[in-house]
Length: 115
Length: 109
Image (cartoon, rainbow over all chains, first blue to last red; front, side, top):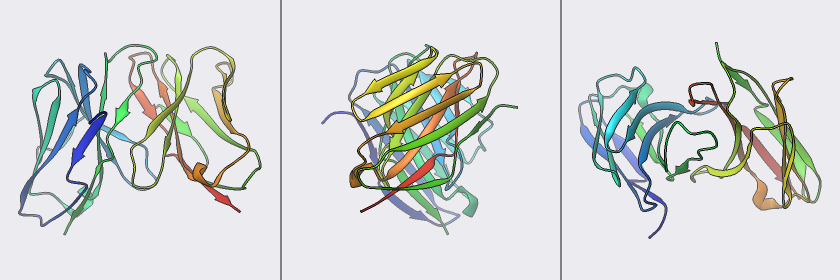
């Protein structure tokens, strides 16, 4: 399998649930990202990991907790979410962040619905 | 603040040509990207422009004018499979990507 794989594709959860999103990249990249995509809004960068170290946290609420055990795997742990957190959550990877022309490779995303 | 503007939705006919515009105001500039995203799928890289001018890649071309803060994506010989959202993104002086909200392109037979 190649590219960036995300599971699950769809997730429905209540506000008191705890769930995790998983992302795996098979491209040998050093950086991984979580983005939030809401309808008719720009992509919002949530977290960046470079060589397993978190290098960016864009004022994301603590109910979202990322984990990067190695450079190929990235998780997003979710707990006590709000209905406004319903969105498509995209994982991406790149070879080296902070470089001009550095393109991102995205997974197909997890469509999250919070009831 | 930093801002990327692109039309929300466009409609075009199969076999025709369509131009999707993107204007930007950012803190510095380290290149502009276009990505294609089919419904329910991952965004995929289309093009990258850092110098002024036109870059052609098959049926798709991307143009950049840094002095005007303007880019466009030109799609020729439109096919039904080109129905998708097209995302414009600019890399600022800190190498951070600033994204537009995307343009949904609808192709009609």
